[in-house]
Amino acid sequence: MTESFEKIRALNVIWDFANDYKLAPNHYYPMDENYKNIILGYIYRTFDLALVDNYFKLLKKSNPFYKEFKNMTKLVMENIAYINLSKTNLVISDFRKKYAREIDKFYSYKKDTTNVYEQIEKAYYEKILNKPITESFLVRELFRELFAIETKDTKDLLKQLDQVFKKYFLFEEFNDDNSLFKDIIKDKKGKESEKKDTDSPSEYTEKSLEELFNAQSAEFTGNIYFEEKQKDMNKNKLFFADDNKDYTQSNDYIEDFYGKSIISLQKQKSLEEKLAKGIHKSKKLYFTKGEYSNSPNAMFNKKTRRKQSEKNKTYIENNLAINNRAINDLKRTIKNSIANYEDEDINQKNTGIINSTRVWRAPILNDYNVFQKIELDKKAKFKVDLLIDGSASQIERQSVVANQAFIIAQTMDDVDIPIRVMSFSTLRDHTVFNIYRDYMEKGKNKNIYNFFASGSNRDGLAFKTLHHILDKENQREEGTRRILIVLSDGKPHDEKQNINTKSINQKDQYIDKTAVDDAAKEIRNIKKDGIAVLGVFTGADEDVENAKLIYNNDFCRITNLENFSKIVSIFMKNQILNN
Image (cartoon, rainbow, N blue to C red; front, side, top):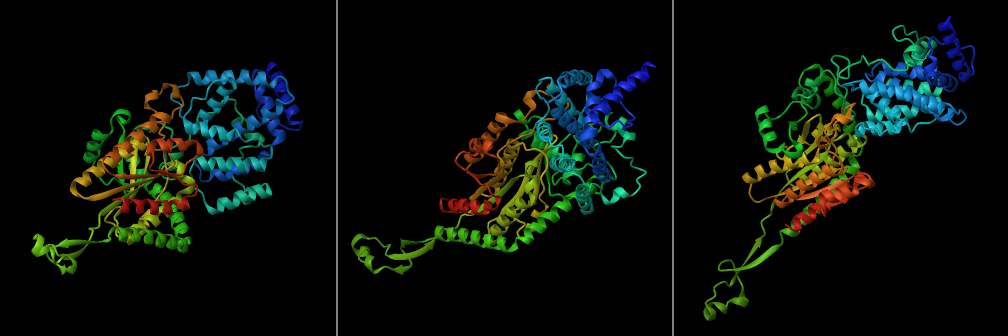
């Protein structure tokens, strides 16, 4: 009797806030969690849950982050419900804080939880209690964008959520999925929504309310690291550890993600012993050309990279006429600079073409240098390294970055200046160098199509490693003028991520001033050895000062990546003429 009375009270709250007494939900919350009944009722009244359900049916086909997306959507709708209810409901705030305290208590006892949704949920309820958000940088950014969504229009809600999810997660996406999503938004249903889907019960119907609007969602059963269909889907935007920790911290994982190493494990460890010191202690180095093994994860990642490579190729080829003009302009500037550098120098010698104005000096002054000899200054040898920040911050402009690198490389080939093009990024404890072409690989610029962005960026270790490599090469090639061009957002950032970030020693975090100072120190060391450096900055206004600190006077900012090649031509001209 008491249980039936409790159910009636709870359902009455749901019906009242849904403004629909015909609803027959299969689930309700006990009255000491009445906050959730109020929220649930408002969600019923406000959102077209059938439309939301169709969106998630679409995602479920190929998206291993389906459950995370579903639960984050639920939390966003809860937040929208609270914002609107609090305008007229005087008790909802107290109910919400009471519920938040229970969730906070739950997470205070929960250990080793690394699920991205739970990090968002933990941060959400802790913020209600005026606690600081202690999660990692990327989680904080995801949190900020999720809860900036305040629309009550279901179509607009789905559009905004879709944009956020695609920004922070990479997953398989097919053309027909995009078409279906547009149909869902346009017609409030997708083409497939008319078909029976016995394997995928409706997520937002009354039958599944218990699952979807549970006070404390169940642990995700989906594993972020997948074999076969659900492979490791480019989680470089958000990294979260799990039971496969040994694998995800290993060279095998890095090999599956980036491709096979081009140096031996012994050589790798030797470099790490020399370079991974101080703030980079225990960090790893990895060098690859993006050639994959036949393991399931590697084959999946190869397929994903090929898709990005095709996008880059299409972008570059669609801009062929513009690129050719840019290459010709660059080539002309550099060739003219070299020609000016090789100006004729007329010297007086004791052999050569006689100079009649100096003949008298021979018998009178015993000066027999009465001949002229025209000599050309010997052309200096240059080698260029183009180092690209390949972190996730470049994801939205991958094709533009690849295009500019292609223009630079093609130009250097045409003027016979050897160039090496590589990107760097950090995944787990590995700083990875992806080499797209080397000095001796003239004409192999189509490999630059394979550029892709991932992970974070430990700039200082990348600069230190490249400096070491250049020093070794210089010992074999005396007289070569080295030039390093870095394309970066000026924000070195490699932050460990964990649900309980308080347990992470702050000294292990490569962020903010610590990271900027370290990167600046390594650039100064490079310059001290006579290597010319140009830092090309593409980041936000707030990071301009960081770029200035790192590169000092050898820094320029471009707001349009299309200007990158022009900046390089000016820099190369100055380097040649001032050599």
